[in-house]
Amino acid sequence: MRWRAGRAFAVLVLLTACRDGAGRRSAADPSAIVVAPAASPAGLVAIDVTGADPSSEPVSPLEVALDDRRLCVRTGGRVHCTTAPSADVSLTAAPALEGIEDAVSLSISGAFGCVATRAGKVLCFGDNTHGQLGAQLRADWSDAPVVVSGVANAKRVLTSEGHACALLGDGTVRCWGRNDGGQTGGSTYYLPAARELVQAEAVERVSDATTLAVGRSTTCAATRGRNVTCWGRAPFDNGRAMYASTNVRPVAVTELAGFEDVAATDGVFCGIARGEVKCWGELWSLFAGDRARASNLVTAGITGARKVKVAATHACALLADGTVTCWGNGSYGALGRGAVLDNGEALAPEPVRDLSSAVDIAVGVVASCAVTGAREIYCWGSWAVPGGSMRKDPVPVKMRLD
Image 1 (tube, one colour):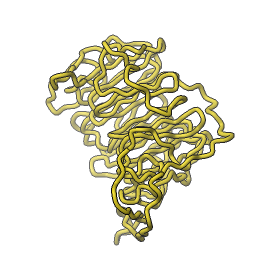
Image 2: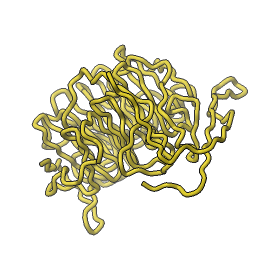
Image 3: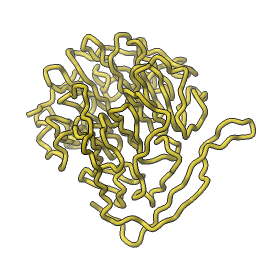
Image 4: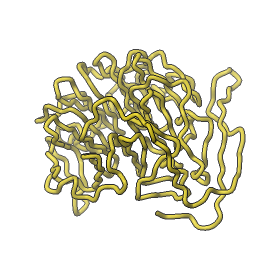
């Protein structure tokens, strides 16, 4: 761990949503600043999970997560990460992250990641510039996973560029980290100098949640009743916000009623409503022509979908028959059809070649992966190899998992 030298001071900013002269909500502005002595460098806060109710739903024993430079795999409760995936080297060859023995959920974004454990705790590792590790840690980085303060009975965790959220067993949500747009659902914006004060906060007005979409400045939750509530800075559809530009507090989005699954990255969102995939936000990377410039929900033309995942420039959907369909930018090979010359136009959905019986999917900036019912992992897209070139496979490559 790296610690900043010298005496630190913690600074936090309280955010309120302001209104302009026309009565519209504008970007949140600081209303108060508090300066306090920094916390102890120990910074690791234990939480009592006695009596935490383990998830009553089946937990997948195998999960893959991707970001712009790593592939991580959760298997047997442990997590292994590599920056150079290869069909010739087992994904478990890299040492497991220390202190993680019973992980049931994994998410990585940018330079940090988190896991939820069977005991209901959440542990995070990597970058802590904005307090996204949630451990009231003064350090700006931690290679070792640290326990998030204030979270118990977590069933799932999702991360974005600078914040993370945990879905709890009772359907409520807690978020922490960067909050410059209200994306954690709280009213406090912790400056980097105050990261040791960051703690997970309960998101008001959210209950019975079943899944989360954690974008760069926006977070959404879908419920068992197929309602979607969002908070933070609204994604824009061709200059039109689906709801007020900044909602520090969560608001139900009527246009998203009926969605049972949602996913996000940066300003791009997609969801599933009765098996049909629809997307909203900054869609230039996912759809061509007028569809990318649409000012409302865009139908992807995919039916029978069970799960959808979104990356910066492409998306993939897992269908009920075990096939995987991807669309968007094809220049990196992440659509499962080989590297396609980038002419500036997004490609329409097509099934990934030579892949079937998938039960889960993951997408990253330049690659995608799938887990099959036979506990096999297949990936396609661009991988860094010695010499600096990129491998762009036309079909999924089976990864070793010893």
